[in-house]
Image (tube, rainbow, N blue to C red):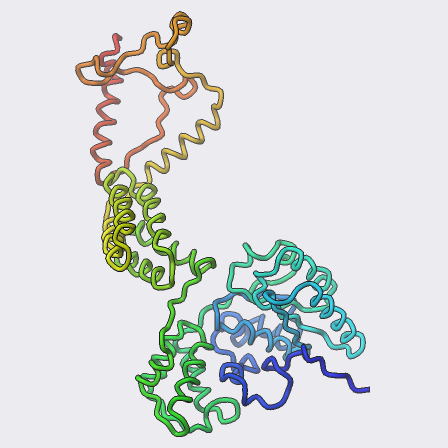
Length: 451
């Protein structure tokens, strides 16, 4: 008896077999083999172990981590096709545990009735909550389904450890402009699934421009190509103007809550720390263009001024705070000027991590000596009883000295002579180093100490 087709079991392109003319170009051009897959040579290039595992159908559960348009869904389809396994999609956004139970029942029936295995493709797996992730474990552990999860987010943060331990994480790289250009040219020449029958002419520089504008997303490039083709019609010529019109407004690649956000913020901070004003300006512009709240940039810059510049240039912190306040007063676009001034100043300021190191050293000492007593001579003595107990006895008031300094100990006995702050060799800290050296000599000489 013939098996009734499951409407949820996708064909190669995610719909039942038949005409694909109604599908978007990106769906029609989805690669069917590893040889058609653009990029990812580090994973599935000739001779790679992963390629052999996919081709012989032995690949187990995997999580595909990569940016949009890098081929995660396509690779899931290819894994299922190579192993003659059913491809069953599951959306972490719109479906829940009841749907997973149905999928597992169908997978069990498919395995026992047809000896055919199932690839469960979980799109945006990082959006599954804990109970949903836990519900996957028995089926994955049993081998009932081969899990292929797709995510744009770092799975070590978003996927629980139990599931991660049962799946191999594969990192997909963004496609290069050359990779995307190859995808566009293949679509232009393909008469079966692509636009070959339209007999379009597209300038080489326009193809290259589309590939660059795609930012590593093949789907984006094909969408622009399809829109341009529709605009010029059969036998038309896609020139730069037609391509730009099809693209309309390209949004910068930025996700305010995802890895791209944190990577770009990290790049900004490290550019400032690394004294590269050009890179700092660029990453700040990318963040703003991507819709980031400029206050995120100011907060990071203020923290950087204290962490990475510190007392090498005490003005850095003041300028960062003033730039933030100026932005509040001016708004956009004028407020971006003090922001840019701040970034250039911070990037070109002398750098020092000595204050940060001193802070960590002081906290470490405080945790190691939580019961250390305050020396008697620097204790507070507001009452007669306290004075009779020796509180404040022997304390020397610094302004009573001709030099404004008395050699006396302020740390507990357990930490006597301990130093936490060591000034760096740049900027204002050179002056601080001179002062510290002078005070150290005064202590050695017993200046004004009565010794």
